[in-house]
Each structure stands twice: as C-alpha cells, then as structure tokens.
Amino acid sequence: MINNKVQLITYADRITGQGIDELSNLLNGPLKDVFAGVHLLPFYNPIDGSDAGFDPIDHSEVDSRLGSWQDIQALGANYDLMADLIVNHVSAQSYQFKDVLAKGKESEFWDLFLTKDDVFPNGMSETEQKAIYRPRPGSCFTPIKCGDGNTYDFWTTFTDNQIDINVKSLAGIEYLNNVLTKFSENNVNIIRLDAAGYAIKQAGTNCFMLDETFAYLDKLSAQANDLGMETIAEIHSHYQTQVEVAKRVNMVYDFALPPLILHSLFSNNADALVDWLAISPRNCLTVLDTHDGIGIIDAGPMGEKPGLLDAEQIDNLVETIHEKSKGQSRLATGAAASNVDLYQVNCTYYNALGADDFDYLLARAIQFFAPGIPQVYYGGLFACENDMDLLANTNVGRDINRPYLSAADIDKALAKPVVNGLIKLIKLRNEHPAFNGEFNVKGEGTSCCLNWHKDESSIELKVNFASREVLIIDQHDNEQVLISLADFIA
Image (tube, rainbow, N blue to C red; front, top):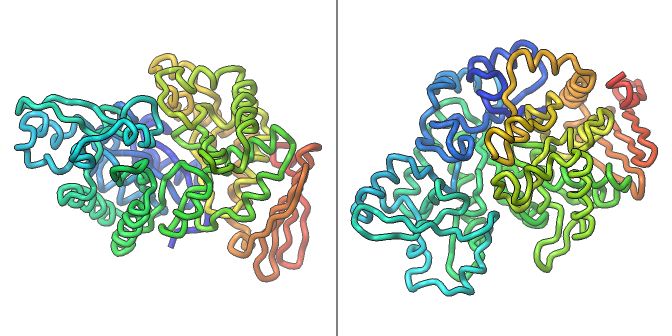
C-alpha cells in the first residue's frame, strides 16, 4: 500500500552530482522525514542518451555510474519507490536493434520491434497516416536500411533513436516481463507506465488510447499487481481520457491540475479549478512540475471535445508564462531549442509564476490540498530558476528545467525562505490526519475552499485569488488553529 504522503521526483545524478547512494544520504540527512517516497527517474543504461534515460539501451541494467540494483534495493527498503516501465520503445543503440540492423528479418530480435507493415500489411493510405496521433511534428516512421539489403519503415513515435516495441509479439511480451520481474525483485513497488497510451497501434485509428489500449493497460496492471507492485499510467490527453484511464489502473496523474492552478493565479478566477476538483480522479498522483514541460493539452480542448479551459484561455495561459518568465520559456518551447513537444511549455514552475515566493507556495498549497498523493520535482523542491546555461549548452528545450545541482547548490537552496516554507507545507500534508479522510471543494469567481475531514479532524484551505488572502484552518484534538499562508515564508 502506497503511503499517502508527499513523494520526491528526481534523477539520481542531477540532484547530487553523484549517484543512488548519495541520493539516499540526502534523503536521510538534510531531507530526513520530508518524503515518504521517491520517483527515481530512469537509472538505466545509459542515463545520458538522447532522451535523458528514456531511451534505454538496456532497460534491465542500472547505469554503473549511478550504482547497482543493490543500491536500488536499499533505497526501496526505506521509501516507496517508483520506476519507469518504458512500455513503448527501446533505444536504437540497444544490442537487440543492432542485431536487427545487421541481419534484418533474419535477426532473432526482429519481432521485438514494430514496423509499418506490422500494422498496415496491405499498405497505408494518406488518410490513414494523417489520422495517426503523434505528439511531435513529422512522420512516426523512420526508414532504415538493414544488413539484408532491405529498407524497413520502423515505427518511431518519439524520435528515430527510440524504436517502438511490438508489445503484441512474444518477444515484446518477454522483454517487458523481464523488466517487471527485475523491478519486483529489487524493492520497486510502483511502476510508472511511460508513454503507455501509444503502445497499441491499429490500422484505421489514431493509434492512441484505443479500446485495445485500455485492455492492454488492464492486463499490464494485473501483472504488476501479481508481483506486488502498483501501476500509474503516464498519459497526456484530454481530461475525460484521464477520468476513464483512472478506472483501469491503480493510479493516474492529475496533469490538468498544473495549468489550472496557473490559470487561477493569472486570472484571479477559481471556476475552472473548482469544476475540475469536483470530478477529478481520486486515485491519482498530483504534480506541478516534472522532468518534462508544463502540460497544456490536459486542460484544453481536443478536436470537438471542449476542455476545462477554452482555446483563448489556453493561449492566454501560455503567453502569460512566457511573460512571467521574461521570455525564457519561449526560448525552450515550441520549435525553439530543438523542442519536439507540441503540448508542453518548458519552464520551471517557479519561473512560470514570475519567481514570486508567495504565489509559488500558494500553488503548492492547492496541490497538497487537492485529491491524490502529491509529488514534488527536485527542481521545484529547491525553487530552481530556469537553467539558461544548460539550455544553451545542450539546445534541448526540457533541459531548462533539468538542472545539475551540487551539494553546495542544495545547501544554498535550503537556506531560502520559500524552500523552508515549502518543506513546512510538505510536513503539514504528511502529518495531518484529515488528509486520510473525505475531500470537498466549493467556490466560484475569486474564491475557493478545499476541505478535508476525518472523524473529529478537519483542515481547510481558503483562497481569495483577488486579494491573495490565504488561510489554513486546522481543526484537530479539539483545537482550531488559523494559519496564514504568508506565515510560511515570514
């Protein structure tokens, strides 16, 4: 059973400059009793591929620069530990795909990878190709010539270095089963199903979140549950899709929450946020920032489906982020900085709020009072600003929010009032008994109230966006305490 307490999202190498042991020392030292769980971002070989570990050469091997499976075991012995099952693809540098490159269809690993012919054996029409949903510009096929002299169109949903797995083939099933087993043997108790919405492709569809995909997620979740692990689906899509996915897996992400909180803070209007919190999945993880950008599609319209925000509100939201970040996010978003994500704005959440300490803590307070288990990204924990030097060095848009922090950087951050205030909020969320009870939300216009109650205990967040008057009303042990959010950074 996952602890209903705040978790940390982090890379092992970017938070300490070292590895898994050093991360454990940080969690057991300066961050002792702050986090109950850790989402350890890809630690597979290699951590420094073209997609920061999400393009594994060997998904079942820990990059030796970070440590070993024994280090993973030790971390998981003390914390809920989440790892990524990269369902959709494998690196083009993997030994399996190199064998395919050398031998073509004669390779023993041929069936591991998905080609256009696997889905469209009778050819693909232009209409069918246009119907395929891809989160990045261009074709989802990469023609590659193999050693047998033939050129094959391999399915590459994300980049040409990430070759899609044929998850229906015996080879694909065995590959993912091997990784699941490795996780279960090493104290990983939460599986994040990365890019799972793209795993099933079918001719004549958009090849994203099909009925068959839901069935696949059911089966994959059951497998993980049988091994003692819970699953969370990582899917950026229309909000109604998240509601449906939540019924099929143990947990989903509330990706609509980050843009809705920004919208409320920018517009001083809580209506969209209140509407969403009234219907949002309760079996979710909440985030404001992650290793990816700030998702926009999750709150907006999709095709004929209206969103939680309309197109004009989404445009205003994106432009306000660019303005608040003094144009820095614009340099890492859209077509800038080799960026390929069509549905995200690359920016730290702190800079998206103009580096305003109070607004940042207010955003975190709303996150912690929303339904779900909160996760805090390491850059957000330390209120990091956009890393423009790293962005300039790599020309990778998402690196604006993926800083490398030394021990000295962390010590400096821990002295900042906003970071201390955030840690106090985290401990309040971890310790108050009412957060294990029932949730209610009400409000309209400039104000909203988020309330939790369990037995004789309750806690409420009252927000007036127009005046920025924010109170926490804490009731337990027959005592009521009023706390101003401003006191957290006094």
